[in-house]
Each structure stands twice: as structure tokens, then as C-alpha cells.
Length: 527
Image (cartoon, rainbow, N blue to C red):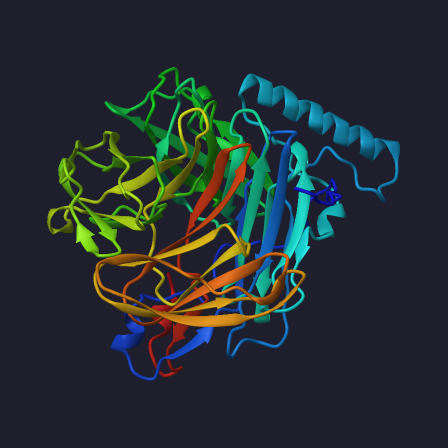
């Protein structure tokens, strides 16, 4: 990729309160329907966290930020992402040898930690230079991008308020030309939280998996990382009480937490104090790598949307917390409807143990999404699939976790005119959706199309492209009627005969909340 390298500065973020919540907190989804006089309004403030993209010197990263146009939003506001961790490259305008020495020391320490497999990026940045944004939106409806090369691309923290808060979305997309994890790696930036589940990680020698923890706040966060393998919880040496310093990023190599080498592991992140953003970066020696986002909360019914139709191998990893066993019913939502994969009608999970199942060429040339159901929904489960494309020796991998539904609206970023696939499934009932292609980052006119998704099916829709597109663009999916729907977006390209790709599920952006009349009980607004 031909890119102009972003000059990324050292220094601390000066965010007074970076938040992962809406200023008007979302109520129970059904509360507005049960009450009278409720109004649906845009959220007023929200926060996002992006993990450090790569440790490879060959990495080329694009950060993208976007807010859709929202009726009723404030006419003022900002959306800013800043560096969360100390960078080794000095700011071009920085002055003073002391500052340069400090940056070099930070880089040396991080390099040493990476070599030892220990926690890197430990130093929270100090000073006030990080007031300079890495990305700042200028107007709703038009995405902006910034680019960075090599291992110095930072983790980002940021907030949006006013007219930029409702539906604010950010993503980082990284291409690594060679080495462990080569390929296309993409992840949507997420809100801070206190608990995460990641089925599909690994501590095997062929994998280099990191759990990235990003703290947006002014006080330290304390985190426990639990690992569960095929026989239950793995004994960890330093997984408890990991401290993530204020406004800093902490990548933790999973294989340093335990002596046990297992192909399939479920990672459970529990925050004792504070809150963090979390994502697993899974890098393979032979099949490239990608980000593994958190699974939807444990549930008796899960949907894993948008398995590529040309997938050559699909491996399902699932885990049920607690002691109860469960037999999962497996169905594939295909373009023609729900079908049961031959030989994989049900999958048995033992309580507290990670189970993996090879489903082969599951989609067989058609769009597809997995629908997993526990009997009566009584036993909660988390799950993800690892997908391979290409032939042996020239394969690339990506992950699709169980996703949350698109209740109102969701957005995918960094789309291109070619190589973008939008996949939508409606497992329980038909739905009508509206898809809007934004203006391009360098030019283009928005376009909108409406689609009908039949009940029980998955469709790869022919998404609109901005007229006169220059640069990349955003795709916003809105539920107009029916549903629930689940959606994902695949970015794909071919480099040296290897099918590079990355898949992002599209959770609801939670950009709108129901606000009752002042005469009503305002406790509905409290989480």
C-alpha cells in the first residue's frame, strides 16, 4: 500500500474523562415499549478504544473514524482519538534532548518486553503533547483516516460528544506483508467494559496470541485473565492482578501466563477495578492472523454472521461457564433457509471446558451464518469460529465471534469499491433493512439502497457504493422492520496469491436511547 506515514507523537493523553458509555445511558431495550410518553433521542457522549495494531515493522495501518448523520442530534460537538501509549518516534516539532532520550528508553523497554514475551507498552505517557489528535472528525456523514507504518502505530483512546456521539464508530485495518500473522488484520474499536469472553484463542507453539488491554481512565485498572482449555481451567502463573496504568495499553502474551500448550483456549477477562477495552490478536506461523473480538455475552442462543462463501475450513470453538453440560443444536442460515450441517447436527459441550469442532467447507460456495441453540436456552454459551480461505501453503485466517443483533443501526468502516462484502442474516423473522454508503474519505456522493431479508436466511447483499468514490467509505445498516438481524462485513484482497481478508461483525451502535417523560420514573435510565 502506498501511504504517507503519520507522524505519531510521544506524550500523554490529556483526556479528563474518556468514557465507554453514553451520557444518557441505554435503558432496558423493551422498557420504551412498555411505557408511554418515551422519546428516542441521540446519545450525548460516548467513548472508544483501539488496541495497538501490530509489533511488525512491516505493518501498514489505517485508522478510520465516522459518525452517521443523525436526525435530532446537537449541532455542536467533537470526536477525537488520541494516542494511548508512549511512542518510540518523536514528534517532528518536539524539542529537547531529554524528551528524545525518554522516548528511546521507552522503546528499548518495550522491545525487551516483547522479546521476553512479557507485558509491553507499560509506560503510560506523561506530559501534555498527546493533546494533538491522531484522528478528529470534521462533520457527520464523512469518514476521516490517518495512516501509520511499522510497529510504532499506537493504541488509541477517545471520546465523542454532541452531534458526533450518536453512532460514532472507529476501526483500524492493518496489512502485514510477511512474517507471523502476515495478511489483513481488522478490528472495530470498542467501548470499555468490565468483562469479556474470547473463545478461539491459543497457547500452542504455532500461535502468538496477545490479549490487548487498554485503559482510558485517569486511574489504574486491575485485571484478571483466566484461561480455559479442553480439560477445564488452566493453571496460570501471572494472570491475576494485572495492572494497566492510566491511559495506557498493555499487550499480554497468553503463552507466558501458563505452561500448558493448547490449540483451543477460551480467555475470560475480568476487571477487578476500573474498566478496560480488550481484544485478542491471534497470529499464526502458517495461516496469517487477525483480531479475535469478544463474543457476545453468554447465551442459550448465538448467531455467528457472515462466514465467507469460499471458506475452505471452518473451526468452531465454544465454551459454557459453570458445571452444566449442554448439547448445542447447530444450523446454518444459508440463502435458501436454515439447514442442518450433515454430521454436525448437535455438538456436546462439557461444563467449564473448551470444545472445538472442525466443520470443514461449511458454506460450500454460498453465504452462511451459524445459529447455535441450547435446549430451552437454559445453558449459556460463548462461541467463535476461525475461518480459512485459500489452499494449503497460501491460506489466510480470520475470526467471527457470536454477535449482538443490529437492533437499530450499525456501521462498518474502511470499505473499498472492490473487495467489500456485506452479509446480513435474519434467523428468526424476515426483515427490511436500509444500507447507506457514506461520502468517501476523498470524495464521492452518498448512496442508499433498501433490501428485504427472508426469515432464516443469510444474504450477501450488493451494497451501494458512493457515486464518484475517492478513498474509502462507511456502510451503515439500519433495521427498518422485522428482525432481529445480524450483520458482518468482509474486506478482501489478494497479495502474492494469498487471499488476504478480515471479517468484522457489526453490533448495534447504541446511538439512540429511549428517554421517558420527566413525570415518569427516571430509574429506567440507570444501568
